[in-house]
Amino acid sequence: MTPPLPWDARHAADIIHRHLHLEGPTLPILHALQEAFGHIPDDAVPMLADALNLSRAEIHGVVTFYHDFRHEPAGRHIIKVCRAEACQSLGSEKTATALLERLGIGWGETTADGTVTVEAVYCLGLCACAPAALIDGDPVGRLDGAKLSAAVEGVRWS
Image 1 (tube, rainbow, N blue to C red):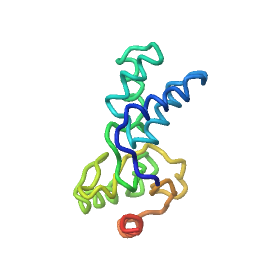
Image 2: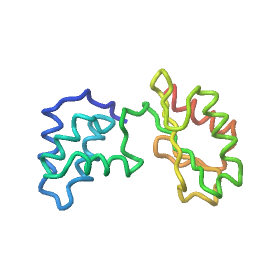
Image 3: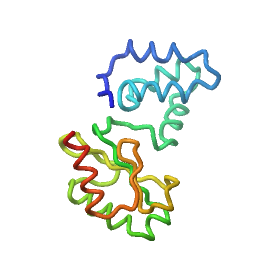
């Protein structure tokens, strides 16, 4: 995972300009901004609105509608724990709660050292392996507290 760049208005303008030719450029630009900066910086919203001749509210609406867009940078490692019915029925809530308590954070938060962000997702399509999670994009199934903790610790200090 590439570390996010610090905010740079000129770099953001370049990202926006490189994607303006695309049909429906809003989402590709937002993805590119998030890839570069680790989140959608507030300063990028008016720049994008101006470039697309949209209101700031319209861009804000898109950013807040899609859960994958962040308002602040995530940790170096992202843990997405499934909270859908199949995972819940096999103990995902208890497993996730134990992890959050051990890390000292809540859902959607990042540890104080910036290493881990834990996010809720609502179905990873891994119901046959429930409870499941994605750890830096890699699926992990049949989780229990020990397996999830070991997996998180494995990436946290890597």
